[in-house]
Image 1 (spheres, rainbow, N blue to C red):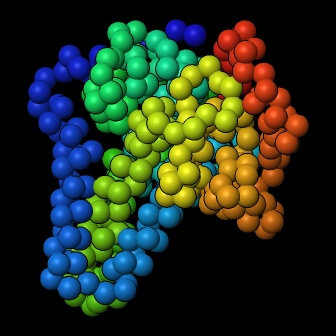
Image 2: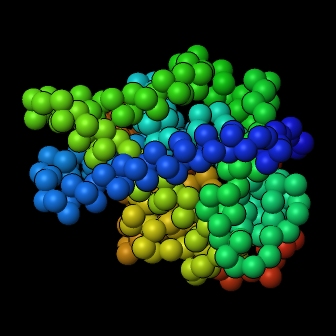
Image 3: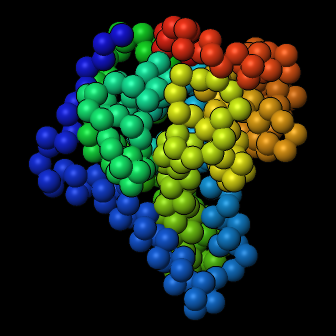
Length: 323
């Protein structure tokens, strides 16, 4: 499937500086702010709780919402939960919903091949990347400055979610939601401390610093888990599992598991593979807010993928509209 793209690397330097400011400099300033608070011992349990609350909430928005629900349709959810996950995912500063979903569906359709936006080995236009350092940096961050998909309402890549008017509103007002993601923890902190300085603390702990850490964690999924780690399942790409990232990234670190069975709502198949995203989905299902979960591969199916690696290259690429 041909997808039109914008050549971001041809844009003027000021555009890249502005983009880097939002992706790196502003969140990094929040990180420095937290370091300053910690070194001066001028922080409280509330600051730390605020950080982890928004890290987990926006992390669930990305991993369960943007990824498992909207990109892979691994389950269905009540409308209030769909909207909540879409808003929380937007709070993570990882671009608007439709761009995120289109990129990810193309990533699965063309993983580590021409057309993949963030492969360590090849750029979207097909040019190869050599050298471990360059490969890692491209997959981790630099890819954001090369190509972007052009969003078209009629595209089969996003047609299913574009039909939802609430999701269209969330996508359209993404910039407003990024600002709200700073203001909300700021207000919560200001109410707790009762001071203007409390608002600043909230913006730093629950806003910018949280965004910095979450961005790095999610970007590591694209870099580390396509270069390093173990590969228990036969796939047509370089996807790997990272147990450490599995815990930190709410289950997303079991990336080889995911690429082997992309429609599964659960990524951590083994008992030692902690998948917080899956636990959240199970909780929502228990309360009747999630339904029609797609099948999780059983032990026999997983063993088949392990023992038939020589057949993997014979499989045809799966259409992105069926991911």
